[in-house]
Image (cartoon, rainbow, N blue to C red; front, side):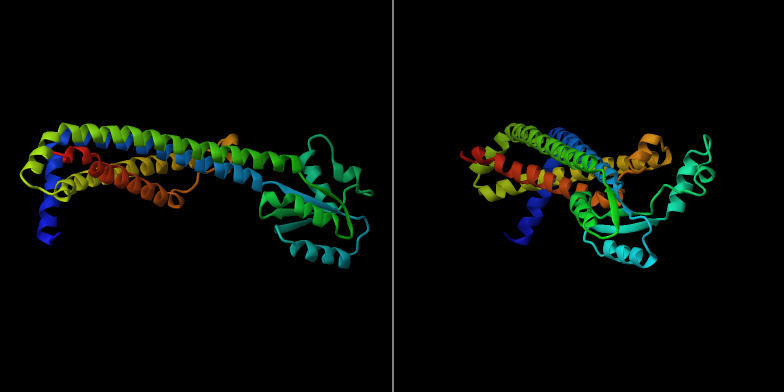
Length: 301
C-alpha cells in the first residue's frame, strides 16, 4: 500500500467515525463500561491479595532460649538464626525486657516488676521475622534443631489459614476478571456486528465499484482501533483517577479495621501501567481487529 493511499484510508476511517457518530458512541460506551468493570475487579483483587500478604507478614516465630545460656552461646545462636534461609530479621528480647513489656500491659492491675523482682519467670527469646509466611514450617524445624533452644512458638494454623485464604481470593478475583472479560467480548462483538450490519449497503457499493477487500477493511480497522483506544483512554482516566482519590481517602481516614490490613491500598504507581496496558490491548484487539473481521461476510457481493 502506498503512503498516499494509507493517509487517504486513515482519514476515511476518522471521517466514518464522525459520520456514524451514534454507533461509534454506542460501541465506545459499551467498551468503556466493560473496561471499568474489569479494571475495578482487577484492582479489588490486587488489594485483597496485598492485604492478605500484609496479614501473613505479621506472623513471626518466637524461639525461647534455655535458662542460664551464656553470652557466647547466645551470640552463636543468633548468628545461626540470622544465616537461616527464609529469615528476614531477628529481634532479641531479654528476660528483663519481656517482664517490662508485660508489666506495662498489665500496669493498671498489678506491678509485675515488683512481684517478680527477685524471680523473673520469663525466658530470653528471639522474635524471628520470615521473608515468606510459607517458609514457616521449614524455619521452625531448623530452629528446633539448634542447641540452646528451649521451645519454639509458631502460629502454624494461622499460617495455613492465610495461605488458603490467599489462594481462594487470588483465584476468585482473577476468575471474576476472566468472566467479565468473556462477557465483554461477547457484548462488544455483538455491538460491532450491529455497527457493520447497519453499513452493509455502503460496503456492498464499494465492492461493486471495484474496491479490494483490504481497501474496504482498512477504514473500518482504523475506525475500530480509534474507538477502542479512545475508550481505553477514558476508562484509564476514570479508573486510575478514581483509584487515586480512593487511596488518598483510605489513608486519611484510618480505623482499627484499616490499620489491621496495613492502613493503605496498593499505591497507584504500582498498578496504573498494568491497567492502561490491559485497556489498550483490550480496545485494540476487540474493536480494531473485531471490526475488520466482522465485515467478512458482507464482502461477498
